[in-house]
Length: 417
Image (cartoon, rainbow, N blue to C red; front, side):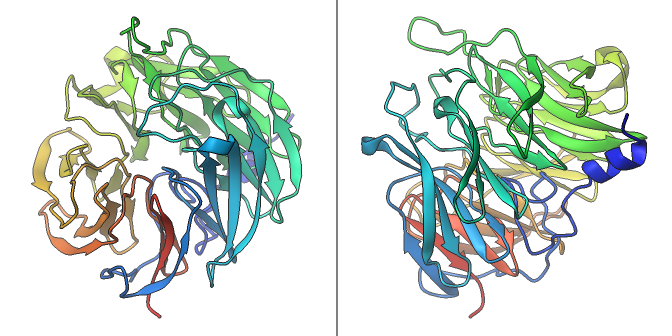
């Protein structure tokens, strides 16, 4: 039986790897970077270290480790589901690996295949290709294992959940839709260590308007003496024991469509929904149904949002679908301000998640290709607006003083030359 020390070591976050961005929302899974003095101003030519053309559109976020940048990529007409690897310094493509999947797979016109981002620990890269399966490669593109036995994904709005690597485990919300399962895999072999089947999923196809689904990624956090794997589902938030998969607590109050991933600060978890759904805060560390005793605040309806937010010094920041920044008090849920981000692009619609630098600056991109920098402060202050001139749906990645941005046409590296 493992000791508590071995458990702590197994689930120690990757914060020591300051120059890496190993997962969709960074080393800590919450959009925060340990770096300061990141680029604030750029254009399609200014402070562009390199840009490289991509073979097709895509919504995923780059991840970075050492001298490599990884991006998932579908080539839709050929049925290809790929992991692309680029040289971090030059943008040169080093290799690609993947599979071909030509069976019918439901998705939305705005959500191409391979929308999930990779996850890496510097030895392996794990990718989730929805119905095509989960694949693991070494840093040179050699396949280490695959799981193609998990079943099909089926939802009118497609897939977008990304794997989470922690210690010797891979956590994955295999969803949304009827086949929604939380999996824990052994990262070295792909073997299932535990799984949790979530009931009540629905695909939302024509004729079935009972839209349900969670595109949330799990978030691993320590609460008191134990680790909790936080998760948002239609109707509820909950926490699992990451070692055994046992459900530790559940809290009601979420609504049917969950687009956002959990956040955590000062023993409080923030759980939010999209599609004009609910938002709530829950005190962690409970057991059983904690709806009555541990729910700190609950908002039955907030503005539509797709991306996830960040927490800084007691305030939660998030962008709405329409490109409005919301700042709320973490402890009370009180709205502090709303400010619309305006840029020269053709649309202000925003689906990307915020990134927070160590010196308190928020970074975001919208679908018009406008990238915004503003202070994480209860008094709104815009720092810059920068246009890339192409659609951006994925989130910004940070590594070694540079920003990595995946557009629908190009992969960009932004930084001082």
